Image (cartoon, rainbow, N blue to C red; front, side, top):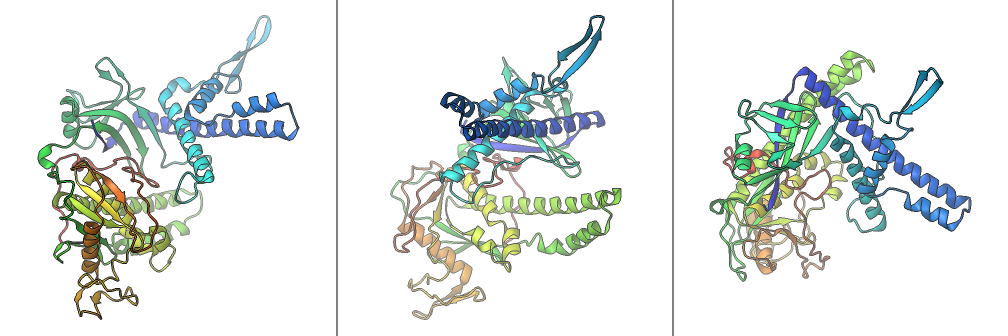
Length: 495
């Protein structure tokens, strides 16, 4: 077992099961908010004791009582949900009125794991916030966790898989109902897609279910089953290279007109994929749907229906873009075992309001994430070049630098040697040459994932930290579609 992957299916629940699923979504939100409230109240008590000048022992005890980790939050939630603060009732007897502590009366109607996972999410948020404040976490500043609001759409809950003997709490398919998923406290729920591929992997011992996340979409329910799967078959992996082999690198240039242009050091173009412009092609309809929402009265049923139509449009755009990126990344990984990507400052580029929408529509960061973990699955190598390396402004023939190159110039013309080449292909060739001159030290076919190497000639910062699969905002480890679990996919987009 060496990799994590996720299978995502559309659920087909009954009306009663939809109510139960919505109850679990509300329980997850309630547990998250309550754990955050318990944490803030404990911090407030510690702050009040410190301000009143209480004894050192009392202050230390109040400080230690603040739950920060996931285990402390789970214990605090379990203690609270059985306490008088969570619920009580009064009984009228012959002797008078008696008080009975009931705790959280509805806690038996939902799975306890859903409540615990809500506490885990609060612990992760607090850990990210403290790491960001102390400087241990790089990247954009992380804000303090906030309370979740109640909504008719959206929301999710997570369940861990527990095994008793040979029986798992989360099961996929049965003999009588192959297209189904069984969850604790909920039962067997129908699935719209075929689950044969996942069932075969589990039956052959090549996959083990870790957890399941149920999400309430705009017009249907979804389930994402995270499994720990074995490595891909050696027949679909790349052949290992010698440790001193510095050839065979392919540079990948990402752009707005051409989403991907791949080329080798000798100037051969191996792949060119035009940008699909998924959002731009549907922007006119999006504006019309947004205007329809703004015309409706707030709180009315018509406004709710118009908002649902707009939300379905956004989901359709996202799914179309995601499917296209999976096709492109799969084709790159299948045909090249050594890829070089450029370290783009996407956050800085998004600050330019003239390019922000086009850059977000291209989804460069998501494409890099998919290439990184898929190449690691296939035993290939991915190198991220230094951010300060001028791949577009450097002549791939003589190496001279043209500083006056602008975004309008789609053809690179060298003023030193007269070399004329496509701008994007020139950048891809320079990236391939850069990787051959700065080959990292990696194991043979070890699936290095993403490796960043500083370019001394560019006088840029050196960062040798490896990026973990799925790291970054709004991403999960190894998340992909079922088509990328070592099975054939649809034809890749035309170059």
